[in-house]
Length: 195
Image 1 (cartoon, helix red, strand yellow):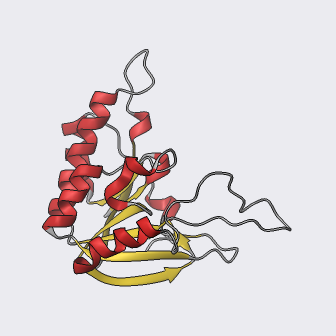
Image 2 (cartoon, rainbow, N blue to C red):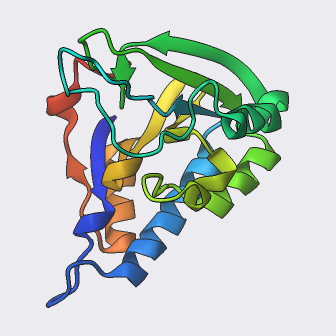
């Protein structure tokens, strides 16, 4: 089992930055693979940046979507409650320890037919920075992770348009050949950080 990175921004045509049609086909293929393979999804609550008078590091100028006191986020939580499994809080984002006292809430849900339909509507990549409507089904969340029997199958870094896949080499090779897209083997880079 290896970890592979698929970047939708790097699916290119000659003389064109991104081949959007091909990127869409790859996303549909990977989305189908994940919703038919996984049995759980983990959603990370969007971090609410606050002003720290001693540092501008955590300051955000834009409107903050998805905080605990955001009524629309509470509505999202209510809409998903039938499939709720558990909530975990830790210092990890993208399955990597962020340190510096940052805390992230992760919500685990059963991958039910209802949630599968929501994923089909929203796709794997959520452009959550610009408007709240672009990822409406999962308002207040980002970076979905997919699990099968407790094992991490894939995770998405929403704002980077990345999908990390955990695949046997023969399956990865088959997918690459079928999609004509390179999957970058990054196993050695993250071996200590993922659980």
